[in-house]
Image 1 (cartoon, rainbow, N blue to C red):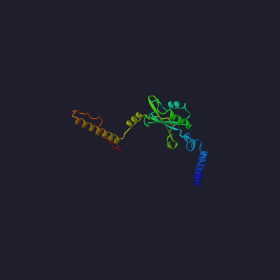
Image 2: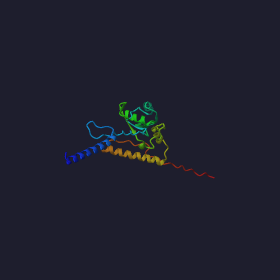
Image 3: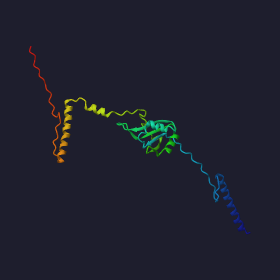
Image 4: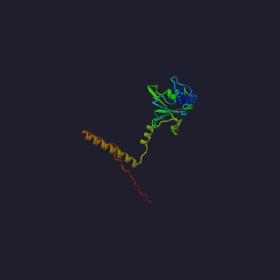
Length: 218
């Protein structure tokens, strides 16, 4: 073996030893070596799941007859309910078919949102979604424990109609009635209908009389 061959062999051995040292250091930090060869791989540690903190649920497509009492009896099988509210019409008190539900345990709220979404109830698919705490409106639970009493609009209209009016208010009311009647007569005439509409009773109001008393003779 010549001098050049010995020099080339030493160079090759030095290169192989450096590669082995590098691969050894890499394998120390790696968790396993692949079967097909190659450098070792490090197993990444699994990330911790994000912990849910929301406890408020939005419930949509609430069927008719499924109100506060029925809803509380149905959902309390999952966990303790903190608050419950169904959106209602301010005038009639009827349900608007959506509401909000709050559990004490956030894990229970997450399970209910996942499992009860699209649940078929009285031919309606309930729509449930978890609301993040930062998106809960501060006035969401305002008046939640208040018992809704719908107004008796018939009694209000009756009282408004039968109230005592002054002469000016009565004349203003009669003027509105006559104005609407005149428009109605024009529409009937424009339609080619020959019809004589009767006059309203009490259209002409007698002027208030002033009684003059004779001065007493001394």
